[in-house]
Image (tube, rainbow, N blue to C red; front, side, top):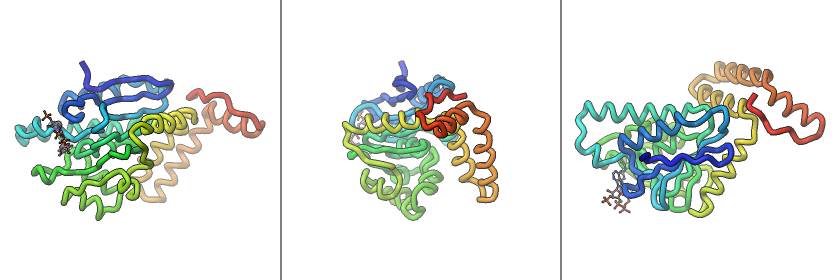
Length: 258
Ligand code: CAA
């Protein structure tokens, strides 16, 4: 039995973290199952991934506190590495990943959403890094990704003071792209995923790499990197079809990832 449900909807994979009784908290098994789910994705066929949580209360309420309460330092190193390696894999996954945050996204849950490319939230979503109140630091990338995404002072407040923020505040801070009712969240996430899915996959994937790698570089190096990705697209059939269709004033054929 897996704690992660894998569903195919057209060219989009929906992964649902399904441990509702514990508000989808991340223990070793959930992390292993999520890792396995990503390994299962056929990257030639699929175009986008959506991650959400089972139920209406939580996206993910954090790493599993009961499991962590008994860990030694050595076990905590392994647990931290497991989470970080998985979240790096998600951040670097060739296909765009959207987090549909349908409730609490605390600790490891907030960090999971931060490892995704785009976050959409339901009105009842709550984001936070409450770890210092448990005697630990964030452990799955929170100290790094949150401060790179929103204003550093706010990230520091969320981490030092454990300040939780609701969906509307997360929207103001640029942490989420949009806020929907619970009912509208998944349809909106699928609409966005499908909008990505119809664009040329080679171009979308190259853009993801250019953004992720380029943002770690200085501007002189970053624009050279962009030139490489930009020019590489000119060897694709999808570029030929996309531009020829525009010139011929017709709708392009579905892109083929070639
Ligand atoms: N780990 C393990 N179990 C959790 C959990 C977590 N992070 N969050 C919730 N649960 C469990 C509860 O223990 C409870 O289980 P039982 O029914 O067996 O008692 C069940 O989920 C429902 O939770 P509550 O009864 O607490 O629900 P609530 O509505 O009263 O409160 C909540 C909801 C505010 C999210 C509260 O559950 C909460 O504060 N959870 C912990 C949030 C947290 O601190 N997360 C950070 C964890 S540390 C971390 O993530 C480290 C890291 O960076 C890697």
